[in-house]
Length: 566
Image (cartoon, rainbow, N blue to C red; front, side, top):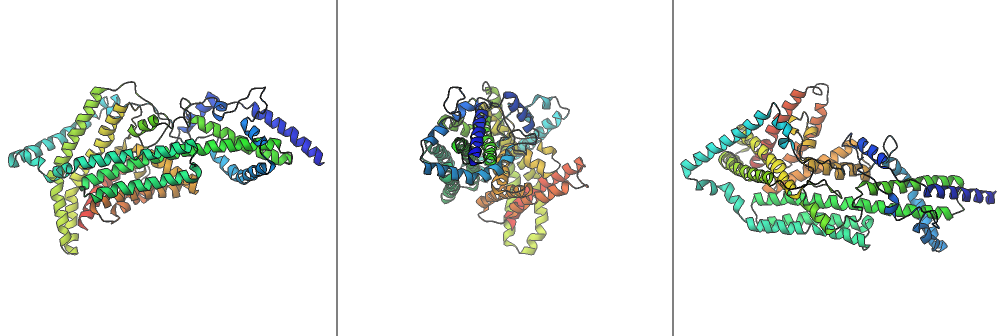
């Protein structure tokens, strides 16, 4: 009976090996079908862009005259001693159950493989909403024009009054402009040093590539230590050197952008290192099973199904990241440099590119950048700064007097702060990001969507800052579900909490105190989202948009005046 079992097992293994040898690579049609399915919902982790020959990537061939259809994996195992083979087999058994539990997460409802990086394929689009031809042909384009005309007239009137009352030099000697000029060269040098230290992340990946570092053990720990040290050191230097609050705020925000960039680069490649290791381990386990005659038919069949599924998925995942530059060939200094220049915080091996730089468009955006900065300085100096002084003066008065004076202070701050909020958003997400994208020939300009039409705060969170939303979706929301085994609600809370803490840190840098006002205001968006989905507000788009704009008008000014007064 035992001899018959070994004979049957051996015959079955031979059949499985023949099936493994003749296993066909994924076709372009399979990958295209998967890609179209993945684009249905950006909250799912499914995406793919193209395919290629998986056998070239794994280093195996399927020639009929090859001695072993499993390639070098079986050859290396044949050279091992029995004790070494037993260690490999025992390790594979320990990981087999864990691998089986994760396999169902790697397929969609139709049974096709799904990539972890659903946002890897960026659709080429070289225009944002305000640059699209459809906007200029819209019936509402006149409102866009009259908004900027009105803002321009207000700024022109303010500048004229300053000129006739104090002289034109008064604007450049004002408090806001003086704060901007202070330590400008030191701040620029600090920012340059901060940028150069980003390349430590590239160094970590090269150490992994050269075999000096294991990403799954010490690599990811070292990367997290680097990120934490990066944030503390550079912002600590800014505070130690006594930079003005505008400079400290700029350095903090830019350091957060750099941390998101390096984190995405490191953990994207780190994930693929893990996939490559799993591919090798699964191939070795298949090779060992093919020589192991002690396995029962059922054990052999079960192990083969799990391990071949693992091999197929790993080949699929490695090819899914774009076949023209295959992992780990993307880990080069040139690739990392271009990534640091691109206006995105989510890493991909390749990005869509435009054919040429439109220098006229660059000139338009540069004009917009400097024009908006001048508007913001004028607005801050002539309208907001006097209100800030009033708010700071209330610190010395009794609490009851503060409370009685606060409503009028808040009302006075709402209009200028709302305008400043809109100008800052347009400066960064339309003018600066589009200018950088054009200079680097970055082909995806999806920096924002029509957030001004939002009917609840979840739409706003997705649309007003698309690059950061994609980062949080991939590296916080989805990662917390996969790594921490959280459900969607728990992952949403974790994502909002992390975002709120980072926003609160910007207030700490300015005021040198932690009050939690911004943290509470941002976390309050979660119950507001739940409220907007009730039957009283769910289908009332106009009411939802009105409630949203009331929040935009009151929220930032409320936060600012609370920090200044209390």
